[in-house]
Length: 385
Ligand code: GLA
Image (tube, rainbow, N blue to C red):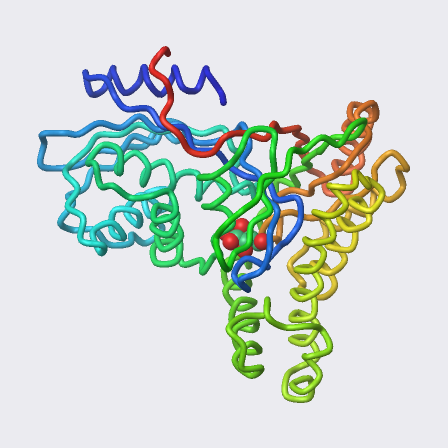
């Protein structure tokens, strides 16, 4: 958690609204493995990180609500009786979406003032949008004593994303951001929406994130299209979700679907079983296997599910030339954002320098390299700031 950011958000709130706010921190997430399996009711392995959204929020006596996005230096004022998605609304739509979903559930929230800021790099595939949604649903739940459980809150956030941002996302991002456990990743079953925390200690190795700093336009439509393919095939197979299917059980429908859809669906089935293998490898501290599974995941995402891009493929291919990196893959929805790499701690600095140079010379623009800490999920920040 970024203490400087908390102080800044708190100070701005007190300055603009002349009162003391409730402070909420809501983290972004990484995902070790299990990409696009969440909306197939399968398994994922995410973790909340020490980067996220800080929200300061308090009830207001005015007829409107006011939200100040500190990073963007933008203010948005709106009435609670007229909530609808805005065209090109950006950050506003995530907040309006949360309010709208709460209203649909029959909750009457009052007006409020809010200031928020974040330190998750935008477009990095580290779920800044889930962090924002969760911060608001959590803050409003506290402020207006709505009595929602964390599980109910993440469904509000997810629906906000569906209905106000137009992305038919699964539950992984909102879950990881809300339920994160310090120093741990969560093996999440997206059917039961229950998880098991795994303490993460890779010994001499650590995780490195490399951000391509690109976000290709396609991403939202492509995401929803892939989800439709998965649902179409599940329907043909007469199962609730692809989670229920073994590779060999695809045979009867193979001739009824395109080769490209067959490849996509087989990726999902394989990736889902890779998550299980990954959790076993963590238990056995089999780092070599963890690395191989990361590479296999990337190959599937790139060649079969077709959600990678040249920049991500380049980064992953470069790691294969370095024996101190055990594995790498693209992370998140795809078409840009980050790769996640398992690298020898003592190699981190050197590889960071090497890859930054190579990426720049290949694409003419910089990539960014981060290491993250695995952190606690959405929570109220103690007011000692
Ligand atoms: C995005 C979505 C998630 C998940 C990932 C891919 O982050 O929000 O629900 O589907 O893509 O694993």
